Amino acid sequence: MKTAIVTDSTAYIPKELREKWKIHMIPLHVIFGTDVYQEEVDLTANAFYEEIKTKELPTTSQPPIGKFVELYEQLASDYDAVISIHLSSGISGTFQGAVTASTMVEGIKVYSFDSEISCMVQGFYALEASEMAERGESAEMIMSRLEDLKTTARAYFMVDDLSNLQRGGRLSSAQAFIGSLLQVKPLLHFENKVIVPFEKIRTRKKALKRMVDLLGEDVSDGGKYRAVIIHANREAEAEEWRQELAALYPNVEFMIGYFGAVIGTHLGEGAMGMGWMKK
Image (cartoon, rainbow, N blue to C red; front, top):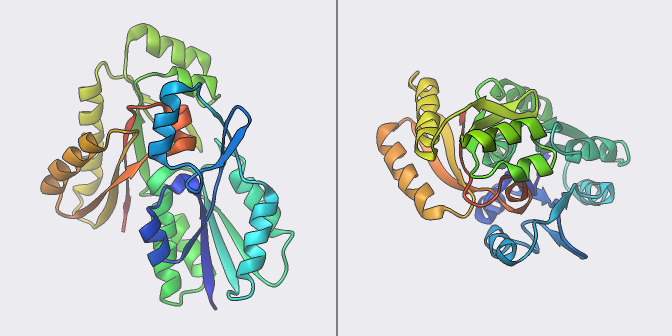
């Protein structure tokens, strides 16, 4: 059985990794006024952060169902099955779009997977699935493994300004107002598929340290982990952090990730995060 792996642009898997592991990508859309861009195709993260310096924040939208159908039909000529891995269904309709599209194609079995998370931790699921598919493991075995990995997947992040999250409907007005009023840097995370405050922390420095502590609590078991430092146009800071953490935790494979245009629209420039998953 030959299984294809699909994810969406919000996994922010570097192009070279996507190509190496033959991961197919469906882009979400970013809309500036009347201009519609395909994330990671027409609009890179760097270009996005330049755009928002002079323009109002864009809106975002999920991929059209027809794009899923088109890709799945193309894959049917070379594959027996598709595992389609998407950002949390609690913050986007992308996963549901994949589910709907799966009922509209013939000649290939589509397995839709709700990562319940986003960014490179979502990408870790795609990488794991691709490695297993390369070894010839069945789609059912891959899906079972991905479900098991949910127990070890974590993502925490902090933003400089809560207004973007509130405006985009990803955080309640009350939560955003209280955070702004108290000048706190709430640590956020995914819980039951949506973004919620994890802890209220007073300063950026303390919020970053708390993420490191949370990582340490999990990886102290000595197991092998993948981890990612995620930044919104703060690459130098992320790289400095990665080097420090790599020295602290030799059992963890660290990489640098980024908040691209879709997620960056909701978090804003300057956001920082960390995610990890057991290997």
